[in-house]
Length: 291
Ligand code: FES
Image (cartoon, rainbow, N blue to C red):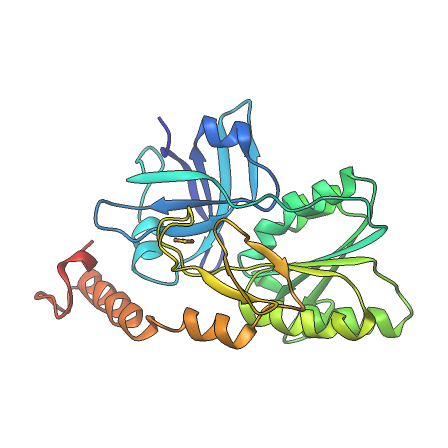
């Protein structure tokens, strides 16, 4: 049954690997695409980048962080249960071509989402360098999978506990200072990482694509929730993206739209956590946040 949970395992603190039964999506998935999951009947529609798929087994894989009500609910679901709704594959696939030397940088959920990109760029004949970032060494995950398909994997950590100290941006700058050249860069992960990494590649004239993680509702171009400004034009991340030219994205607008519901999201999330702890009974917010 589509949407049945095969695996929902925490791989590093606060990041889970979600494997879902979804034969139709697994047959059609391409690198760079995403799914929308609604955990329960009153849940939000949450977009997740596809991290892998297996057409023979009829399964798809995504990684997610517990960052709000819906992902908290999802994290509590067990193998054998089914999500309320699942749709995909959505979005335009990443344009995969032979560029030469390709840099794929990922962090956060992007450590999962970068795998099919690295694989596809490699299959297209590129030399692929994968930059994997984390706050510290023990939050790096999916490294073995990426190593299977990348020519080179470079780890960077904000606290310097492993690899290059810093983020993808600092690692890229360190490699560039060594004289390394890249013909194309692709970044996937948290918005801040994608922004500063794009700004870092711009002076070098490296074509740079980012996989934007906009807020979404329908995921099919009908609601306008995911709109972004790219090169001065309004685009919908769900149907025109999620990939866009990182040098043309209006990052201020991306951040401002992502922050639109943060107070409500935090309130709902804290309320649900308190309910789980048994410290509140009556809802101060909409009934929809009930688990
Ligand atoms: Fe509604 Fe993109 S999510 S238009």
